[in-house]
Image 1 (tube, helix red, strand yellow):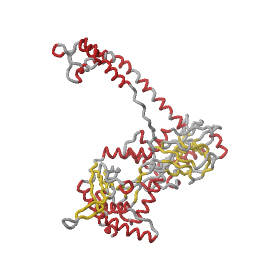
Image 2 (cartoon, one colour):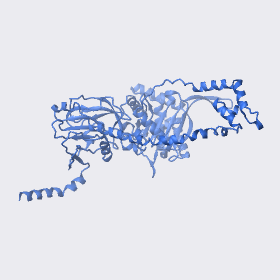
Image 3 (cartoon, one colour):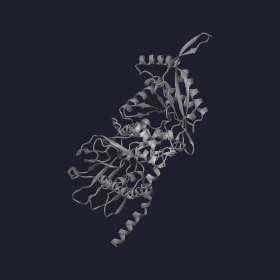
Image 4 (cartoon, helix red, strand yellow):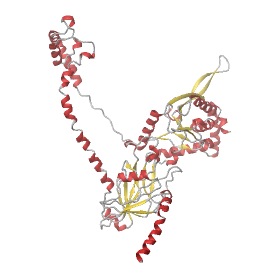
Length: 555
């Protein structure tokens, strides 16, 4: 009866298993082992990352003899991560792997994997570009804020991770002790999911992980060893080259004549010329019908031709002195910038429209506004702030330029979010001013200054540069560049390049009158798939109207 009652109890529980599994958002899988082998290899961690959403968690223990049990517990990382909050369309993901061992040498522990802290470290970037080895999801350990042996609690910052865009704080998920730092401070190109640290629950277990090495690093070596057989497979081609090498002398002799006009020479003269490295085209033949004979070669060598050819051969044989250079490693932002711009030029049909806008009234209005700002203790308004505002209002008037191309449709955005290009020592950043058409000039100026400072300090968060619909690049004011053409920032459809203003002589009202005026050239780069030439010209007309009549921007 006891066994029968147990079976009935278990059958009641199993009735709701399918419902529970469907209701849950993630699966928690555990493998139990009698060995002390570390749980998750690099390939398993990466495939787990791709197979689950960023808010899902996989917990498993590797084994030699595997028995699997499914649990219905769930962990939502977005609620426990705390900082950083990455917006509505992206959430942080941390690989958290727990290992169990029945042996006395290794107690229960947790392997912490490299988290995904940037959209370009995940599949979001692969939707734009094909995934290759140079674009794998990598991160760098900028700084460890906890030391081995320190106690950690949920919400405490473990380390700072340098992504391709910024440096982001990584927080601890569970309470425990930091037993082992696997990836030291300054480690580069750590793949998402790769183990970076070990935590334990009990403080006395810390010493047992002093020499511990996770299996992810050990398992990474066999593929390299497996890569060796192709080299051995490549060994057979040399015999083919040896077989092909004997005919080469036969084919090399008749090859010189076809290079230019045909040169007639006797076989003996041709052999003598080849032995002395003499070009037959430089010798005038004295034989029948201008044929070069042996005597012609001998006369040429006796007249000093041999010395000339010897000198030429010495010059060609002399080694070119080695160049002095320094190899600068690619930073993450440099890799992403290079890939995005190459993708843009290869796939987007660019065209360019340039117009000169008179900025005399704009400069006058700026002076008046800055007087009010200084009187009220506010920050000064720059010409670039006025350009951003004018671009945003022009996008609201011509929304076709505030769009993005997809294979199935053109997406036209209702939000006007302007990316502003900022050059730093680390590379090029494009932080975004959101809803710029609805903000005042002082607010735009304050946001641009704050975002530029964060870019230079490499502290931008993903929400600081995501969601842009149009880009402004200004090389005129800071660098004095007269005019240039910018590359469209995908997936956007247009970018505005702003040059420096210069004074010009313009005709006056009378026949002999002339005036001076300041003109600023701007060039609009467009994606022809989205923005036709007439639409681009209409946008430039609207932009020029706001610049030349800046009071209209205040209405």
